[in-house]
Length: 194
Image 1 (spheres, rainbow, N blue to C red):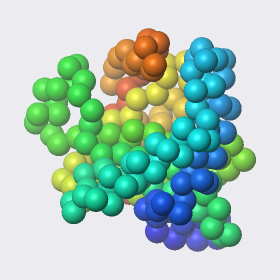
Image 2 (cartoon, one colour):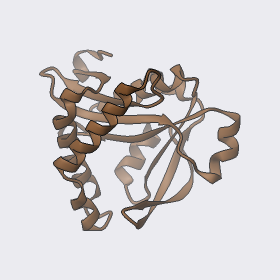
Image 3 (tube, rainbow, N blue to C red):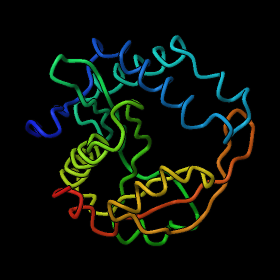
C-alpha cells in the first residue's frame, strides 16, 4: 500500500530481512512508551536480541503456513527504513467478549508501534488500515485492541480512529498483573478509509 507524499511510507508484509529494524522500532518505542507505566524490570526485558528472536520466530511460522490467519506488517519510509509495525489476527480468548465473538468473527490488533520520531504523522493509521484490510479478507469485520489502562497517548490514538471502549481486563506480563482496557470497532471497514 503506497500512501503518497504527505505520509511518505509504504505498508507491506514484514520479511525476515526486516527483523533487525523491527526489533529497533519495537524496543525503542516500547521503552519510550512504557517507562514509568510498568515495572522497570519488564521494560528492560525487551532487548534488541530477544525482540529479534521473537520476530524471526513469528515470521518463520507465518511463512510455513499455507493460509496464515495472522499478519505482521511494517511501515517503511522512502529509504526502506522501518518506522512502524503492527501484528494482528483472530481475537484472543476473553470471557467478557466470548458471546459477541461467537456471533461475529472478530480480529485483534495484537500490537502497533510507531517510531517515536514518526508518531502523530499518520503511520499508525496506515498500519491499522492495512491490518483491517487483512482481517476483512478473512471474514472478520469486528476488531479489538487492548492497551495498558495508564497509556493515555495510545488510548487517545485509538479513540481518534474510532475505537470504542469495550471493557477492562487483566493482562499478565512475566507474571506481573497489569490493567488493560479494550477498544472495539464493531465494523472494522470504517478503518479502510483512514
